[in-house]
Each structure stands twice: as structure tokens, then as C-alpha cells.
Amino acid sequence: MCAQAIVGTLGSKTMGRHKVKIVNSHSSIVNPKAFTLIELLVVIAVIALLLALLIPVLRSAKERAYRAVCLSNLRQLTLAWTAYATEYDSKIVLGDPFSGRGNINRSTGRVTIVEESWLGTAFYVPECRSELIEDPNKGALWPWIQDVDIYRCPLGLAGHAATYTPVASANGKNVEGTYLPNGMGRRVGSTVLKLTSLTDIISPGGGQRAVFIDTGQTPIDSFFVYYLYPNWKRYNPPPKHHHNGVTLSMADGHAEYWKWKGHETINIPLVRLFYSKNPNLFYEVVDGPDVPGCKGYEPQTEDGMYDLRRLQKATWGRLGYTLDSEGVP
Image (tube, rainbow, N blue to C red; front, side, top):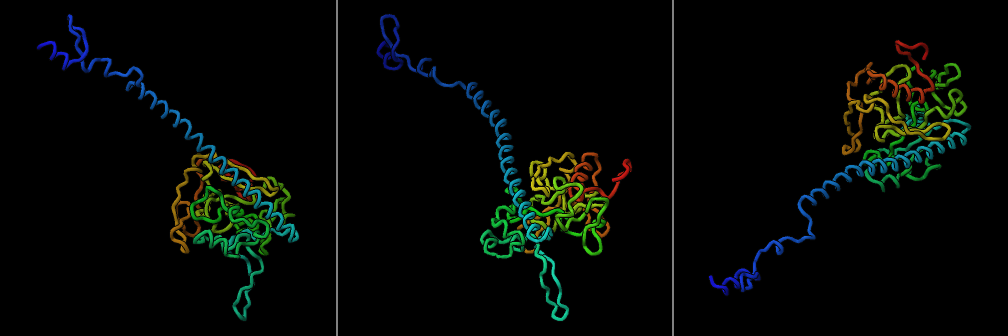
């Protein structure tokens, strides 16, 4: 091959007396400022590690922010609950939602509502937010809290307009062993089990008697925990959407967050049921038989029993049963 041909095909390089040109030399392929494949993989690995560390932190911060809103809602509801009782000579508002209490006119069969429930039918699975806002039936506490967002936790189930409800002892559902034939609360020592008046809160004091609890879903009735039995009721499973814990308020106006201690409490099997009014919405209950005499789910571990008993004590002020290894409740 002649020198001219070499120059034409290879490019600049000295070969003897001739300067030729080299194509695809090492210096023309590699950019010394570029990343190598190993360096890129290291960068990607570092980014992935940082994301793995930051995402749980961000989720935790978001949960704490939601929890703060929830606790604030509970405090405001409890202040309204107290204001209602102050307005009505210490009488506590009816704790069952939606229904109210009434008298039946035997001649006409009509029912006259004489005691309005704390939460009105407007909050019972409305089709949309505008329907909720326009419906005037918002319950007995609405004059004190005229903001529909206060009635639900930001972490509640989608489509549920209200997620808070009073515990059964706060003038709610009659629970075996806690009330007298006239509907008033039964007294054991200085403890009134079912509270119908602020003056009933004697021992324990208001800082230890629960009022509202966040169930995370539309309440069917007041939150029911047994007094006489160490069981969770089927239709009132332990709320656990707050990072495996629950938020609740006390009669003195403060609100608390309880982290469930037992894995058993957190892992109680649940099943979904659907509302007849809105079959697109579901609520959760303990998975198990729904038959007469069935007392729901009984914890089998020490930590699981601790969680249940803690909530029962906050609800009723004491326990109505003893375990085999204990003396008085």
C-alpha cells in the first residue's frame, strides 16, 4: 500500500518520513471526563439506599401530621360534648349516632324525637360531600362544631364522612352489667359505669374516662367493648389505622394516642361488609361467627389481653370480670 493510500485511510501518524492519520485511536474513543459503568452503578446504588432510608421517614412524618389533626379533632369534639352537657344541666348527649330517642304516640303510631343523637343522619354514608353539607340533619353537637371535616380522621376509610364515635359508656349503647332498669348507669363503689351526666364522673376522674374514639370508619353505634367479658365485640374491632394504634379523647378534654402492644391485637382477622345504602362502601368487622351467645374474639396472649383490658378500663372505669390468676377486677 502506498503512503498516499495510508494517509487517506488511517489519518495522522508518523511512519518513517510519512505522516499518516490513525482512525479509531484510543484517545478518540474514550472521554476521560465520562462516568464508567461501575461508577454509574455505584451512584444508582447510593440513590436507592437513600430512598430506602428516606421513604419510611417521610411516611412516618406524614402519619404524625395526620395523627396531630386527628387528635385536634377529638379534642374539639370533646369540648363540644362538654359544652352540650353544660347547656343541658350536665346531661350528656346521646352517644348512639343517627337514631335518637323518641316517644311513640299510640293513637297515631308516630314517633316524636325527644333526644337527638350526637351525630345526625347527614353523616351516614352520603353520596357526596355536597349532599352532606346541604343536609341539615347533622346531630346535636353541630351547633358547637359546624365543620364537617372535624367529624372524620384524615386517615379514615375513603367515602366515610364520620369516623369518630363516643364509647358505649358515654351515654351510648346499653351494655350488659353496666346499667339499671331505668337506663341510668350502674354504680360499683364510687364508679358509675354508664355515664349519663357529667356529675357521674367521680372515680376514676375525667382524665381516665374515655369519651370519643377514632374507629376509622362510619360508626354503626357507640363503640362497644364488653364490661363482663374479656372479648372484642365482632362489630367493634380494635381500631389500628394509626400506625397500629388508636386515638381517643378523655372527659377532661385531652386526647391520647395508644400504640397497641400486642401483635395479636394488630393481626385480628377482619372481614369486609358493605352498607345497604351505598354498596360501594365497606366497613370492617372481626372475622368470626355472628350467632347468639358468641362474645366475639378473646385474646390469647398477655399483650393482646393487656390492650383489651386497657380500653375496657378507660371505657367503664373498671373491669367487670377477673382472670384466673387475679383477684378482684
